[in-house]
Image 1: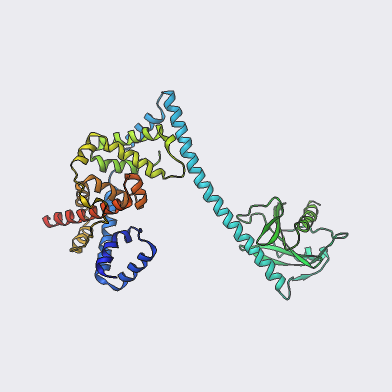
Image 2: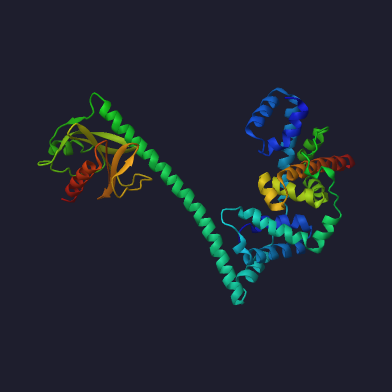
Length: 250
Length: 164
């Protein structure tokens, strides 16, 4: 890039208004041309100085109060209604903006949690030793977690159902310790995760939902967040969830 | 009240007078509230408020006088004059010495069409598009005015420093 061309674009570059390709070209030129780099530095200094010098005038508190009184405190009814409506309008615009940002963040966090759980589920099943306590007996599996997770829980009786308990292991999600139980139905394995409810950023799904090709049901009960996760049909996820819910009540 | 301090600062720069700035701000809020129905949600609220203030100023006696005395010549819609810095050390000196008053005087002496885009860009940190929406001109014109505002400011600053 020639110096003349570069300098013609310097202001837009420093204002952050140069398109990506031109920005990169000028960036490269500034790294190799001391004269243009010095010019850019001077312009940056001037920009900063103008920003400081330009923020020059401050309204007096008296004027602020006067405007507030005139606008908000005017006895004319029509004007008051206008002010109220306009303020409500401002508030709606502001709240809508904040809410959409909040929901976007929540949604992103939720996707991250599902993604981590999917990883835990898949990596556990892929492991040669998927569980640390190998037992089909809930009275063996439950006590094994004592002292390993900061909560206790009940596990369902599986007689007369298609489900089998394979065992469990301690797991972590976002540095929170939890219980990871593996159940089997036919040839499919299902993960059941239990975490303290304070697990940040989780929004429950009211029904079985499909996340990253897995079926998931999640709810809170007695201070615990349950997540049932697997590649089986939604009905099977629902059945196992119902069994867990009723056992937690007992 | 949203944008109160910023609008006042901008109004004072335009009117160059405290009383007029206060009148401008007051009238801006009154107009904004009356015309809030015309504000389209999803569009730029800040640009809308500044546009009201600016239009109020331009129709005031001071505003009319200010715009009548400014010649905006042929390069208005051009790509903008190339501004080169022949004496960069002069500006660096200005900042080193913290001659803020001198710089403020130089800004105040800029023609109003240059002063407003410069302040919207540097102080309010508006994008070119926002400035174009506020001032009601194409982006090319914004760039051209900014470029000329900066060139005029540099020349003025250098001249003032030369006199120091």
